[in-house]
Image 1 (cartoon, helix red, strand yellow):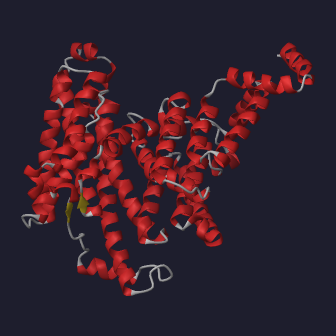
Image 2 (image 1 turned 45 degrees about the horizontal axis):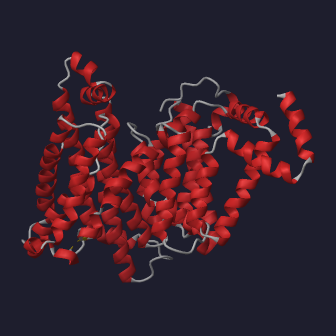
Image 3 (image 1 turned 60 degrees about the vertical axis):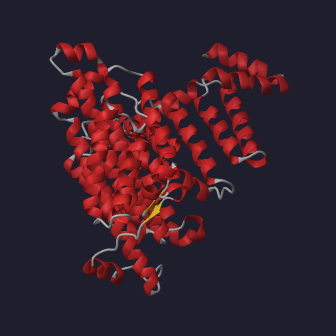
Length: 486
């Protein structure tokens, strides 16, 4: 993400750009949640401020010196390296490991959907195949876990090529339904009595979690935060979670770099050509069937690594772990939210899936079912992104990066000045309604109401303002004057 704009001169070179401000705000929420959020406001707030100030100074200094936004990716990687020491407990570190696993899955889905334009709803089955093969070989046959991972990833990749065969004759919703069949069939198959001796049936399979080697375990236990981990058991748990986190992080970084290079390679350009126009791609000599099936194979390779990382982090597999929503529909939804055919979009999507509902739950101290809040947040983000950010959150950040604070403030002021008083009155009325819904009906319903508040067109708020105008006839004359002026 190069800084090609020419407006950052003088003092503004050392001031965070609008997009950098977005990244810093996200870092504040991320660190605050890691430090425990509202459970200890003073410590959480002070610690978050320290991390963000350091990120501000380092990131902006590097960007100002080198005129390149990609140094923020390096800064993000450095923050990721110290995540175990930022977390208030091992649960936070475990959630970050799951973020890396989910990012791996979305990386693969980005190849087949973002770059090639094919919709796949069967990736939950691909992750399950990899995880179950590793679990069966290691639990039932005593294989070394890394040898079992090699077999599991290889079989999953081969199955991905087979799953891509329907793409040769199907497209659009028909292909989505064909791949959906794999996600629907896989969990019931695991529960059949025929395979119960191998898969564990409904109970699933348990396995002892991977322990770090002696020197690594000693180092992590010795350097564990003393205030959060006070006895030997807690420090050993910290070492175990941190070791699994670094394995997941390494896999995620390799997946990110591979995806970045793939998008700029001959294969990546061919995938995009197939997505944009199969007829044009064929006329340029591209073997469309080969690239379609290859995209599914590469995507399945990512899913195989995601399944392997899933088993290492959780050390437990069950049919319910690979249901349609969690590992087939949600990855596609958060790929769209993060940004299709982008390198950073899957990372944004993974954080959105694992962190946004938890952060909001902590800040708002929402009581109730977390899964319902997560589903509501997914719906809200999808509605907002598809109507307001067609290029996803990552694309929106890159677009904002092209603006200076002066231009952003000027455009915002011009937009606000063009809105009529009835628009603002209707907006205020809608905001009151959302608050009342959250207070007396439920947070989940308020989230959906907020989505409508954000995506509703100008005419809706002007119409809502008519309600207030009828309640106060004096507004009618003011509205007429405003209409004459505009």
